[in-house]
Amino acid sequence: MKNKLTLAAFAAAFAVSTASAQDGGVDFEKQILPILKQKCFKCHEKEKEDNGKIKKPKGGLRLDNAEAIMKGGKEYPAENVVAGKPDASWMLKTMALPESDEFAMPPEGKGDRVTAEEQALVKKWIESGAAFGAWKGVE
View 1 (cartoon, rainbow, N blue to C red):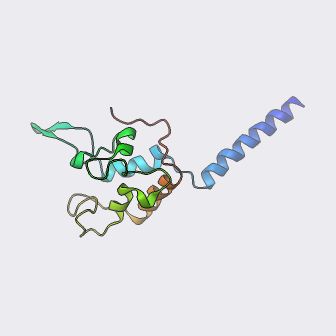
View 2 (view 1 turned 180 degrees about the horizontal axis):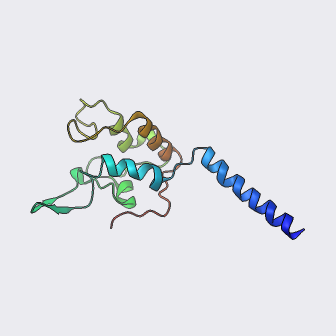
View 3 (view 1 turned 45 degrees about the vertical axis):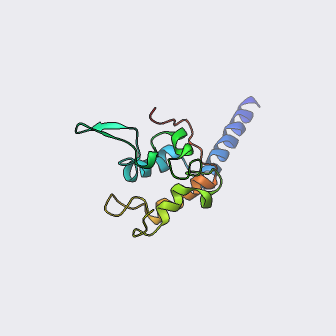
């Protein structure tokens, strides 16, 4: 009887985790962070020295730290990512703008654009609450 209960509990836990993956749960570290690293960190990471010059994050916006992502930059503070509200989230808005728009990210000639598929994933992450899991990022 005990083995049947243990097996049933395991099966239930597996079903829940499988359902979570199937219902489109977005894993920040596995799905969103790689997009940010590849397409955003070049300009939006912690201040650092580069060839003897101090390189600060553009617009005061860091995307290499969970708290900083939610805080936003000089423009639209606290609206960079609005959990549950992708249409109010400046980060997603700027990714979706045409390349010729002055607010489009990344700016023309500064890197590869975030694809429509990647934008959809970021939107889904924001819609589902913009959770970072255990990821804190760079201090």
